[in-house]
Amino acid sequence: MDWVKAMPARGDVLFGTAVSCSDGDGFGLASEAGRVRIRLVWIDAPEMNQPYGGEARRALWGLLSGIGLRVEVKGHDKYGRSLGLVVRDDGVVVNLRMIEIGAAHYYAKFGHGWTSMREAEASARGERRGLWALAHVHRPWDWRRQDNYHVRVCGVK
Image (tube, rainbow, N blue to C red; front, side):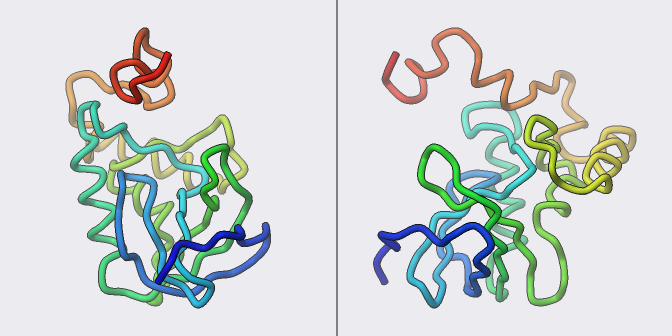
């Protein structure tokens, strides 16, 4: 199955299964439209080169693997990924669950999510779940702004 050349439109609903997981907030979806790159909307997981990045990726794959998914397309990012609200066949909202288990931050900059996401992050932080158990927590958007991040990670200035 090839990657979709035309992006699903905002408001589209896709059904399928996860076929790959690039990090804690991105995955490949095999859908009726073909393979689509999905970025979970309203959350931001640690980068793969920052503390808890690998754990976040494993947590996301654990939530996605082997179960049917429904993705509500909320828009697109500058990398050509569809921004999606992901709901499993059993009703679990993956975006919210990643925050609840402490594997991702609520992305308040694009905070059109639910109040429950902010509350879930406060609860995870208070109970020191997941990344909140680390001695020093760096928000991914701050991590990406560090000097030389793009040179170290992307090989570009």
